[in-house]
Every structure is written in structure tokens, then in C-alpha cells.
Image (cartoon, rainbow, N blue to C red; front, side, top):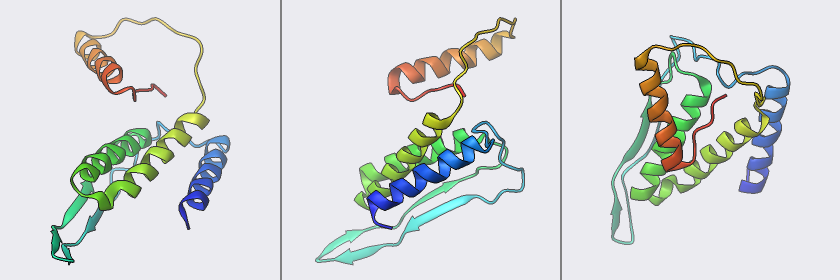
Length: 137
């Protein structure tokens, strides 16, 4: 797939999945394999690029968290190795499509929460303000 076609395929699949009842908060099963990709060491025109790899344990995590972590890892790798740039862009596009097709909750509810949970949410909100990427599904 060339990039425009690949983006359209992602858009269509995510739309179909989400409209068919898929849930971005679904937990990846405990026995799920790690996600691992790499670019091997290469030498071209006297320039050496060392092996780089993305390796992520996805088990027991919400699907949306897996997508975000993969996007963050790919973006970090792209800063060091340009071969990861397309991968980072594709993970970002995938995340944008999941966000687009996830149901938006308009009502708020109130509940008492333990102090440790409150601290976690405060860190998430701070991260969202800093990075602009946090959405609660």
C-alpha cells in the first residue's frame, strides 16, 4: 500500500470495527505476544545506521494504551533514526482514527475515589496539558 491508500484502509477498518462494537478500552489478553519490530544495522554510502528496535509488552493493557505507547516509542525512535518516521506517522494516524470513532461520553458522574487514584488522574491531566494527547475513552 502506498501511504494515501494505507491511510484509507486504516480509516475504513477502524470505522468498521468501532461501529461494530469494538472498544478502545478492551484489555489485551494476558497471553498476548510482545510487539517487536526492528531495523537492522545498515551501511550505505559510508553512513552507518545501527540496529534500532521497538519492543513493547502489550498484555493486560487497554488497546488505546497500546496504540499510544507504540506511537510514543515510534516517535522517540524516529528522532534518532529516520527509518521510523513512517511508522510513527502511521501509529499517529491509527490513534486519530480510534479517537475519531470512539463514542464520546457527554454526561459526568460523581464518586469518591481513593487518594492514590486521584494522584494518578492528576498526572494524566498534567501529561495531557503538556503533550495534548490524553483522551479518556
